[in-house]
Length: 113
Length: 112
Image (cartoon, each protein chain N blue to C red):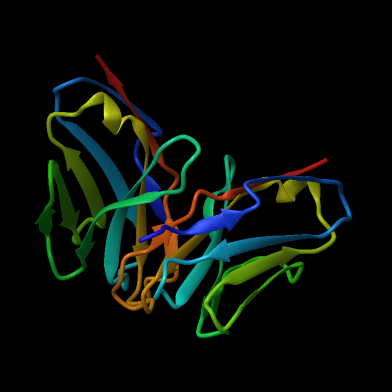
């Protein structure tokens, strides 16, 4: 079974631009979560989607948004990019969210110049 | 608020020795505690988890211990191998696997 895939793997943007990252969960997984990983803040939870609905949200500004499609694929969008948004963005999927293991993708490395 | 933390940012061990990585947490309501391994260029990989009503769980070469009295979690790796070199994170969550709170990570280096 294929793992969680994320595209693109690397991205360079400039301040003020917006970016969309994509995540394809493991087949059959309906929960998709997004995390931001930086050297200073570590791994921080952004949001979780389940059956096309946002089920949980972390403490990030409204510039960070996401959505999930009927095939469980998910996208996250960051608008008006800031230098501090440079990070590794990780996507994780699980079967239903409750009591199940999360499987992480390799991440998208975003650099904001 | 909830938080998890690791006692040491780095740990260096000799190949074949046992490794112990520690973590302190603050949220007594957490339902699961999880250990992840992250190798360079990869996302975190699940190692083992333990439910809050347990105090010990064993896997292949790994053991997780949970002490709820002092809110302490540890990961023991037996006969540490060079392939175990990575960053290890502890995390906690409620019943929903979709939202986890991660600690800062311990970098384990295994010397041949």
